[in-house]
Length: 338
Image (cartoon, rainbow, N blue to C red; front, side, top):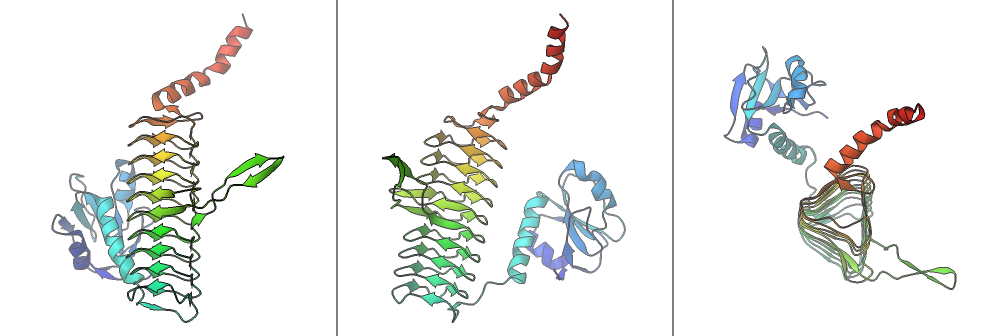
């Protein structure tokens, strides 16, 4: 990825709360980790365990914490800031808009738009998109091969990447990001055993997402059996996440890759579900709780819970039991020798 940005441009993005020290002259021409950076790159340092990488880095410009006490080598410039990771995000966001500009409003000639659909004059509809009957598209940007189902709605400022499907009557809020291949409003997994057969339970509800929700590549959110499956404001969902029918997720939650939430469960605000973890059906996970990696919650959790394992249990209990298990082989030997 070729780019070239002046140090003045970088400083303008960061703002006034920065101290500059060093003698680098030139433009920033790339971005890399401390270990991988070459001359002309910008990098950042925020954890002491990367101290050796900082001291050896070839990066020309480095964001470092204000109180770090490190100094640049010859030919380097350090930018002393309050939060290097956050300022790097600001820089990358500005550069992302520059390198991948928002397409101009319009409808690609290969797209199909039903005559009854309502499309904002500020929307972009990309190649081979399908906008079905009664759909409403705000000032959003739809990449190629996106399907918006009958009666579905997409809010202003939303960006939808290729091959995304938004099911019929589902509602996508403002400023959402739907990454490649995700499905909003797939059929909920519901069956009832009748006369020896599994009879499908029709799922006639919808999915609704609030503002500033991100949904990762190939994640699936099932429509409700009745009512709605709901994703709260500011919640971020990683790739390959499954959210079942009638789940309610609060504000500012994080769901990490390969996690799954079973039907009709509730996640209150600021819940974190780590990678490969799950929540059984019809549970409530209290606000500010964390379910650790590869853990399964089979009971509801009170607010501010932090659990690990299967079944999920408080972290302190989990690690105590883990420690005891390591001693079992020696204990068995001792009993055997009695």
